[in-house]
Length: 126
Image 1: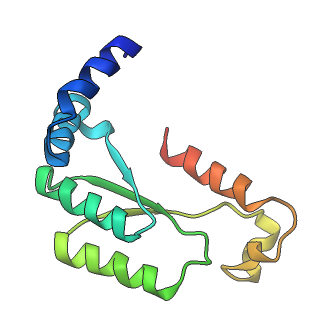
Image 2: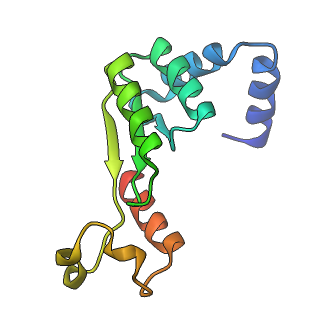
């Protein structure tokens, strides 16, 4: 998309509802559309709108192993309310550390959290 095309679309959608933009997005890009969510309030609003437009909206999340219990509760509520399938990705850990429990990477100094998150994000964006 050229900058001119993007500017034209921006103008066309400026007065439209978010649902209209989501409908156009699903019509234009189909199954390539992905909602990446951390399950904060704004993410749940976006999921609500997307599922109303496309009942098969693809929702993904990154579980670092450090999420608060409230996040898992919201994920479960979204699954229950919308019948959504949430694809969950986890940071990869070195094979030698896998046997020490699911949260071993928290203590690991070998890779930064940013590097682990970027690696997980790269896996789902292929």
